Length: 201
Ligand code: FES
Ligand code: FES
Figure 1 (cartoon, rainbow, N blue to C red):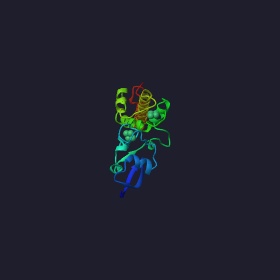
Figure 2: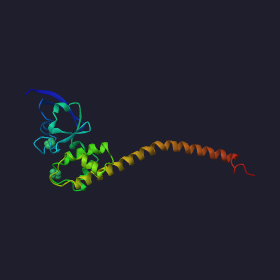
Figure 3: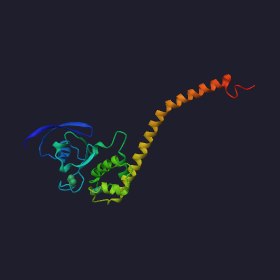
Figure 4: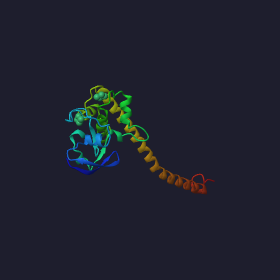
């Protein structure tokens, strides 16, 4: 089949690839780009969710998506989650809560959970269950996975609150400094004799 050149943005990197019209996004990622973190857990029939990646932040089954149609999207796979500072809080939480056994479902679970928490930072357990309904795990059952997602939601909320607090403190400080100047100015006027003490006997 004829191949056409196409450009893809995956995990912040740009790739130039020759692709056939019927190449799936799953095969592009695994076979052409070597990003094997994205798994195929069923007969590429949309039944397991293991191949889930994010296209412009939306969970998408890579086995049912033609690579060609993802050209203009930001594609995020599990390889793009960690930073030089460490694992993503979802990855940490899955490890801490024993939500990973064979790990085959984990990349799809984590990316689906990321999209869920990006949209709803304070989900209930029911929200998480509903959000992950299309992702199957054959090993752990779902309790540990739900616990891990709830724990990651807590971590992400705390981190966000801390960074918002720091940003607010940075914004307030100049005002406080101005206020301090005004107070200093006021007290010097007072010492010149206009205040109750300065104007005494
Ligand atoms: S590989 Fe099972 S849904 Fe895509
Ligand atoms: S950890 Fe094995 S399928 Fe989920």
